[in-house]
Image (cartoon, rainbow, N blue to C red; front, top):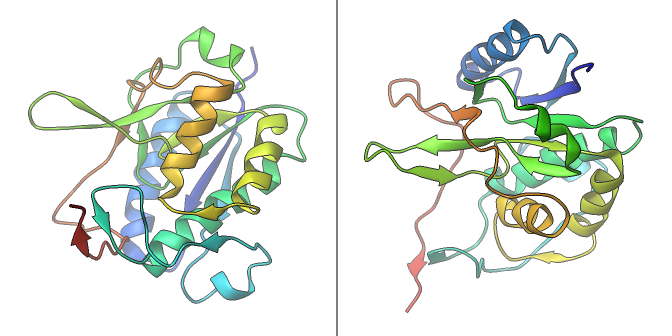
Length: 202
């Protein structure tokens, strides 16, 4: 079976993003995914003229804290929508990666029978896995079109992971393949996302 194209979201002028993206690219390429296409991430500087319209609630109501979306959180929405917009015009499924998605186990054959499935998670020190739906997921053009339309017509109240996960539950599978991709963390390198704290829900 021909391996699907991989769409790797990265910020080309950000050293942190490029460091992670380099490791991610290498892990997928070495596993035989030779069609890796770079998606230039939407940033706070480009999000207002990126040609994608996403509405955000004034205050996030999903998650532990109630607060406004940060600009970098909004940009993650736009970047995934940009990738979805590309895949929806294709004839075959694609795999969308955030820059810190490292392939650590070969994809099982049954991955390809789903219209959308999560491939990765974060490994915690206690040995448990934390779900990260937006980190890495396989998606068909049909579901890409549906998810893009959903993200650009609703008012978003939580991070993009919540809406990707919603589609996995409804149209594919949620947790079956999350051991394949590791959400890389390196405190010495840092990260590219700003997470304001805000007020904890009562």
